[in-house]
Amino acid sequence: MTEPGSGPHPAHARRDLALHEWQHLHPLSPVLRGGLVGLAVLGYAGSQLVDNVFRGLGGGDADRDDADGGPDRGVREGLGFLFDHSLVAVAVVLVALCLVGLVGWLTWRFSKFRVAGGQIEFRKGWLFREHRQVPLERVQAIEISRPLLAQLTGLSQVIVQSAGGGDSHLKLAFLGAGRAEEVRRELLALAGRRDEAARADAGADGASHQRFPGPGGDDEGREVLRVPNSRLFVATILHGGTIVLGAVGLLVGALALATWGSSLEVLTGAVIALPALGPLVFGLVVNRVGELLKHGNFRLGDTGTAARIQHGLTDKRTTTIPLHRIQAVGMVQPMWWRPFGWWRVKVNVAGVAQDPTGSSDNETTVLPVGTLDQALAVLTLLDPALSEGDLRRAALGDGVDGGWTLVSERARRLDPLSWHRSGFAVSEHSLMLRTGRWWRRVCVMPHARVQSLRLSQGPLDARLDLVTVTLVSTPGPVDLSIEHLDAETGSRLLRDEASRARAARAISRTACTEPEVPSQLVPRDRTDER
Image 1 (spheres, rainbow, N blue to C red):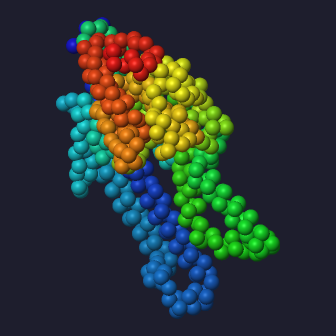
Image 2: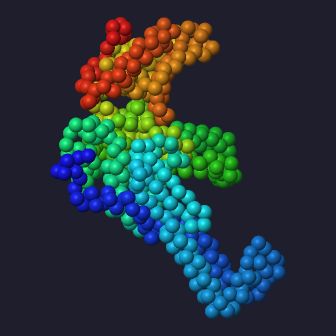
Image 3: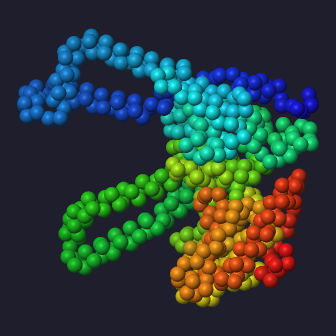
């Protein structure tokens, strides 16, 4: 219990109390949830109406078409009675609208949510009822989403992400935009998710104000960076699929011109080949457009204890990633981004990345494309114990400078291009990996976040006495594996890292605050001393 003077603001307390009572969603929620289906039905009905009107004006042509038969003949004959009796048609339309309105009202009437007994409850359904419960201690994050139809009506949906993954997420769709933000803040406060807040509760007054900003507080946090849509567009186009497809197109075009020597014949051949290339081009366009729509208008903010991400062109989303839930970080630079010096930063987040729907990319991409300085700023924001200098050397350097241990020289046969760059380095705080010369990758994992370690060896590695060491993290896009290590080096890394992980977890359990540790990378011959 907090002291009378240290509790939340009275207005905030009244809203918290209101969450304990059953509340309805916004009255327009059924319309938005069934919006696409409704638009499809209205579009079909409108097309049939226009078709029948034109066929009626055509007279004999319509009769001949009907005599010839067709897939819509029965439909047109059934609708003909309505066009001949306008009052009946109006009555049918009114009855249909009343039925739709009644179903929508019943859907809204039986959709309620509340917070009681330490859990979020949501009920829906009037014919087939469903009652879902999510314990507050299982809440990982709370996200705000605004699809296109919701933006047009000023509504938002609140997505409560739990530890079970995508199937266990609870969606409150839809609420007013202002009310959705209030509900998100109140649920975060009631869930008590932040480590700093839990420590403050143990022995500090006024923790409520420090933990969760109220409606008038700076919940948006400090803006760290924005990604221009123009840069995102160029980076989206510079993809392996588009580059390969463009190169193949140019090659085929050049061969066709050299063979036939006539642009008209080449154009005719291209038109004939379109049906075969159509699915490939369509799939690539859908993939690239989806990437652009998903990461457009990207903004990253810092609330002090969490990273706040806002992104999306048609489906605007606001995601909060608590820093203490981040298990590993990594940045990657594709080969075609190197002339621009661009990098992408992703993270593994506990309880998020195992989402089977594939939407977890919204919570694991913290920088879709940015300069090296921006990538380093994001990484040091997510984990202040990291050194910007060490990260820069990992991204651009090679060799053993800076305390790096490289893979075995025998790996030259398996990886002739990047064996001289791939390796690992150890600091007091974390283990850092780097691989690739043309496709650069840097991964960092704090010792305390290591779930387990694995040493593996394939037939070719066994022949060369090489091994692969993997640091097992929570599921996510950051892969912490280093291949082609010397067998003795890999065994020593496995043994020493297990010891460091145990010690780091023991310190994190007993310490009240995260100790400030140096991140200076240490040479390999000093790892055994710790």
